[in-house]
Image 1 (cartoon, rainbow, N blue to C red):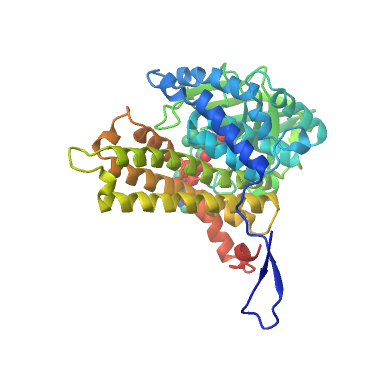
Image 2: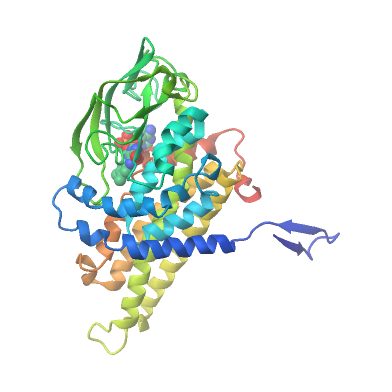
Length: 432
Ligand SMILES: Cc1cc2nc3c(=O)[nH]c(=O)nc-3n(C[C@H](O)[C@H](O)[C@H](O)COP(=O)(O)OP(=O)(O)OC[C@H]3O[C@@H](n4cnc5c(N)ncnc54)[C@H](O)[C@@H]3O)c2cc1C
């Protein structure tokens, strides 16, 4: 906080300003220890998985690094302090995300996707559900995985559309004291777990009112599903362009049963829970982009200062190269501060938080793709070879505008709805 005396005001009022991007000493320590951990443990992941032929083999090969991440307490550091973790807020989480993503996107996403899997529990679970779901994730041992099961074959952008649209198709029907779940899901991070039999915790978005005319505000629920004994069927592991060591499977539920009390929040309250869970991750996706861009920038800057490409001077001496690097650096700083502002707004539950988070997601993700492509032009043809890092960074970045609610089908639509609403205040992001 700084005290600011504004000379333009007639009555020389003293205004208190709270714009301050200075990290606290604890945050700088957290940032440095995340950087050290990534440099020691995550740095070899890309080489470990490079030549493994299947998605499952690559995912399994990341398990030792994930186990070390858990053992070193990083999973606890992204779980909120009030429920037994060590996370003090989204800004701290963003610091960890940038440092991890700058070194390896695979294990980083496995950790953050587990957090996404736990978010409906954190946002709406009762104390028993929170304890049941979180215990393995707080233990600091093993390789626990949680998965948020929302996306379905055939698309999910319109999950809340009423009939005649299909919307969410996975269903849960009460049979005595149990929900019986049926339906297919796909692209769900780590959902099949390390053994193809299911992650430790699945939070499953499903239709609990199967009347096709029922309003999505009352017909969807999120169920807490601990690793099922039976009925979880693994169908396929996708062979993805980037995040090659992170698993995104297709699978289905075949009469999976959970107790009636495993609904998270209210029966029928699933739509709001999906939306609140994705608000926090949006700001983090902006930061994932920052981590990837930063890594590409560091490489391109070093290359430009050290390579003459058969000419007389290092290529940074050429104005076009220098300007491209300058533009890249501006874009990285801009994306970082927008994401930090969104995280800070989420931490303080400001009215502008949702708008800022979606903006950070769209801007950070699309900027990452553009900036890494520009930096490949700076480095030139050698950047196209996988023995330099830029091609892999671009492969990882390309998904950022597509996942966590695609920027076309979901995220821009959310902003569009906000702008079109009668009480939209364009200055809310400035004053709160
Ligand atoms: C690495 C990775 C990890 C993932 N992890 C998870 C996870 O843990 N859990 C999970 O549930 N999902 C996960 N996903 C899936 C992903 O987040 C979503 O399925 C995806 O964001 C849905 O976006 P979409 O808009 O492309 O949807 P789709 O429904 O497939 O829509 C496709 C396209 O149709 C158009 N479109 C559709 N409807 C509209 C509309 N109303 N207005 C305008 N355009 C429209 C848009 O062009 C859109 O891009 C993951 C995906 C990847 C690649």
